[in-house]
Image (cartoon, rainbow over the protein chains, first blue to last red):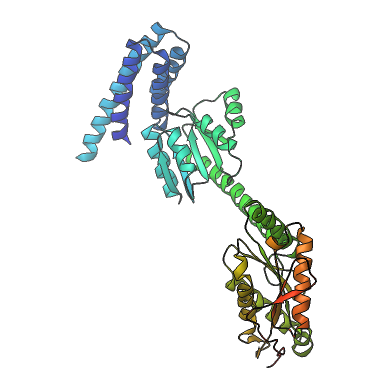
Length: 93
Length: 324
């Protein structure tokens, strides 16, 4: 599941970034929705919270707030992924 | 039991798949709404479905709506899965035709309990459909022989006659009556009589084509309807039917009984102006003539006269045999 998360969260984040760059806020909201679901499934609640806020803000068309939240989400996911990698190395050894 | 999971997020889908496979379900996973609809419309589809609300192509709510528009199909138990939590959204989901609604992330025990509730509904539906089919069969078939009952065979004949008139072909009506059947009942009892009727029915069924029709018209009377029959071969076909019954003994009450049958024949194409009741009357008149000619033979009604045509080449009337 963590391997799926590694792949899918990266793909989803780059989709979100591209959507924001193109000003497609509804596509950004959808990507945030997917990330929210993904993280809730793995009990990554603080990350899921940011994704939930991003979903709402993007849906309501607030670009600046969305930009900030997306950066926050990227940072949160990056830290989760670092942790995931550490855990996976530990499991392997 | 088969279950469809439609979820575009791989992680959620894998989690659901694992949970449900462990719970003993046969999982059919898809990642968009269009495929979900496709899987649910295939032969022998899963009848339980977990549909994510937000999916590419068609979303879960649209899948529910499209499925519910199709009335003539088995019931599907649909559970919408979403992280949308507002009352308004739950109402929208259920109004689209979903049976239940589950918010993500799901709790495995709650999910399984809700699926069991769905299975109970589907089992109930199966039992109701089975009961309806059994009642439909009972309402249209004769209880003893499982042939069409009188009302239905006459109705089928009526449709067939209308069709053959439209298509300019001929429907053959045979009214068949077992000879001296009362003696079977009187000598061997009604149980033996019933066995004879069942075996005669089987033989009648096996001697006609799959699209011909056989019904029980009365106690020991049968109505056989041959579709699109060549008028020239009607007598020979009727004699085949007669022969199928009388040519070898029927085992009843542990004894081989030889039972014969008389057949009266009428062709729809020879009575173009007549209604179905009149055509049956003509067949009955021919049957009466067959009885008068010594039984165990075929007679055909001729239009415009009170006469009947014997089977040609003529089969000498045989003395009805009731032997054991």
